[in-house]
Length: 228
Image 1 (cartoon, rainbow, N blue to C red):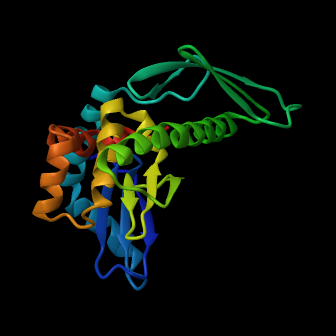
Image 2: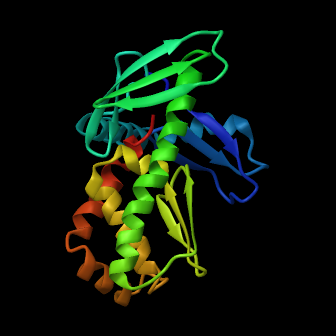
């Protein structure tokens, strides 16, 4: 029997042990008083479910085409694939990333971790531009306004809209096809009118994004693969 690699995270808010399986691997979340000797039996008990989930995630990632952050690799960008040209020079004091057509040129002073961080910063900058452009068009069409825009990197949340109109979007949406980002923007703009997920909200979203259900299914199926 092969060993399933996993990491353990203690959580003061956890009442029971639970297992999270996503694009980052397998995580066992346990309460503070949970005995570590019980973790391995717990994982083995859930092994069939873990293996099925890992297999499903692997198949889904293969459909999407994951990022390969290395020289000659590729990263997705709103339905495109950008080929990476990565160079490293320890004398370099400032990392640099520039897009040239379907290529992304990256120059860093450190190793692979530095390149990954530089590319993520580039995505965050681009996300602010891509989201703001779509958001401005969507609110103008809806006849509403928003208070502020933040770009974040949450693990499980794609976007949010507060009661005050503060908008937040995950930069990893740029790793998805453009219609997925369009959908998430329309979803959050609808929350500027209806803050909850009542029938009124879904009816409003349907009027603005007729195929929202298909796009929501795509995000639920493939969202785990949207990472560098």
